[in-house]
Length: 348
Ligand SMILES: Nc1ncnc2c1ncn2[C@@H]1O[C@H](COP(=O)(O)OP(=O)(O)OP(=O)(O)O)[C@@H](O)[C@H]1O
Ligand SMILES: [Mg+2]
Image (tube, rainbow, N blue to C red):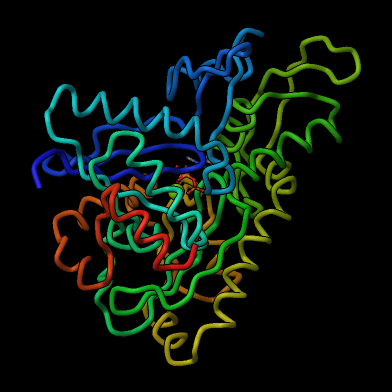
């Protein structure tokens, strides 16, 4: 098929695009600015991210992905359309687009995502599960005959999957990931220190001093906010222990989803996982000491992938190079004509 081959990791926090033969060519924030009056999409991506918390009333900032799934189809279609046009320029042939989706999306949502990709300018589109792509991108040998565990901690969801022989044997997901940790810090400062901070500041605190367990060497950062009581500007210091305690409950939820998945894993595969260890991907995996904490809580060997944020996109690239293997596993590109057929065949 002529035309570009594009892989899209549509995440809650960021969108990464891989172009076959070129690699990852785009990494943008999953955010858009709309005209408050008309609802038209005016700008998307990183240009908008810097406006979060500072936008004028005439603009409405929206996050069209929530908890790993599309919450605003119109905005996502406009975003994808914009990126596809930017990448394809005035090429005659429309691109083939491979899109990742969380393992938990329903059949109905799959049909809708395929339709959206076609409407955004794809000539044909194929959906693949995010944990599979993440595992490939993390360098795991997905053809391994035993069970392997991958945990993707993104912005919106923590997805735990057990893979075997190139397919997903089991997957569980929790709507607690990196963004929930930043929100917990924000909430803590409002409730306990009477200080309001915006999303970018909460993110900064998490990255600079956030950690998944108490540390012997304390870290601290000063940040600017607004007093909840006087509404005047306020400058406060927050330490790694305080940040950890604010995030503790949410971190516990991540541990629970891993434990629940392990409980449901057949014993043979659980034995393989104990031997092989677990691979962490997604930006949330970059939280300080997360690997150490998960090892302490589960007793498993934990390895954080190299470049965890780009594993899914890199995995899509590998899948594009091995289209025949994908087809053997039941992943096919759909065109506009066969999406209706696909939807009917699944009684959607
Ligand atoms: N150094 C870091 N320390 C802690 N958290 C980080 C760091 N870098 C990125 N993150 C977090 O990673 C998350 C984004 O990760 P990623 O880009 O994998 O998410 P996503 O794919 O957009 O989301 P999802 O897969 O849930 O839809 C954000 O919550 C961000 O705060
Ligand atoms: Mg992701």
